[in-house]
Image (tube, rainbow, N blue to C red; front, side, top):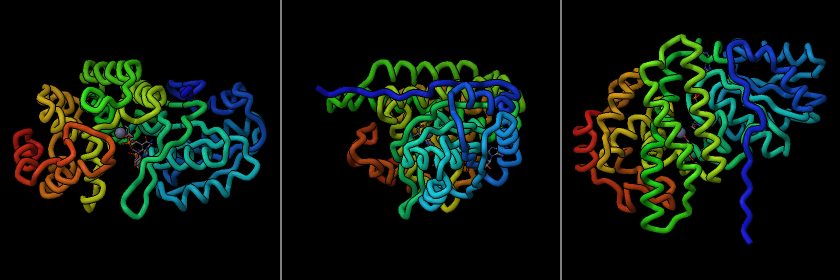
Length: 347
Ligand SMILES: NC(=O)C1=CN([C@@H]2O[C@H](COP(=O)(O)OP(=O)(O)OC[C@H]3O[C@@H](n4cnc5c(N)ncnc54)[C@H](O)[C@@H]3O)[C@@H](O)[C@H]2O)C=CC1
Ligand SMILES: O=C(CO)COP(=O)(O)O
Ligand SMILES: [Zn+2]
């Protein structure tokens, strides 16, 4: 008998100034003793100090570790720093949250996600992306026990991060098409409920594109809730399939070949335009929606040379080979990759 275990965040707190409630939220979650707060150098100032003060005001003993990279060493540093802590808070962007997520998972304690930017669905997902020699590896982890998303802080983050978050949500379109293709072709496990949630999240974000504006807490709230739904869809499915298909293979390949990759969500948005074309879908709608949100739709806007786009397209099918997508087992030739990127206006 195979049992399915679904772990989801227990509490999700969003709103302007909710960071000030961090101590009370942890108390309500019956957390006690020492709390380890992991931040980036910059996000310590932006949000970490507020969270630490709120915890101390509620009587918690707090320690802080700041990290630079989402590396194995950073995870070990946080694991070593956990000591008697009963919980870890990750206060920052995706790198900080991933390090806190993996270190707490490996130490057998919970973690609370406190995103300072809405740049991708890692803020709620049970995945952590950690740098290794070959680029980065996507690892299984525990989803956050709770999420504290201060929309005032997130709305003040560079708008590029919010636009990137939209790209990561819109990428669910082609991720689901790839998953359905693999289910039909190879009878791969497929979850209707996870797909429905993932697709609904992408559709809602596409429909609200005109409302996603720089500096608005409402826009930040809209994108944060969509990213959380996307992360929950991954937890329900027990795989990142609802949010990661051929467009993510392209982004992961670009992370390897490009000297200076763009943001994850930006690369996934561009990948979605091209993979939707391969699926025979409405790629122009994807492109135009990303344009409305002011997310990049060309390699030039991402600051990446055309040759790296073509190289990443020809390598994409080699990423996570067991995950069948529209790229097939043989992937794109150099000619077809160039034709695809030119036809969709990416280069
Ligand atoms: N776990 C998962 O499911 C996923 C993980 N990832 C990983 O996430 C990482 C990328 O995360 P990102 O958030 O895109 O980049 P990031 O974590 O590098 O943050 C981008 C920059 O924004 C700054 N920042 C964050 N919040 C800010 C604020 N409120 N004000 C001013 N600056 C702020 C950070 O200090 C950093 O310099 C990569 O390591 C990637 O592999 C990507 C997708 C999914
Ligand atoms: O980025 C993700 C979902 O948006 C995680 O997907 P991966 O499993 O491809 O790392
Ligand atoms: Zn993603």
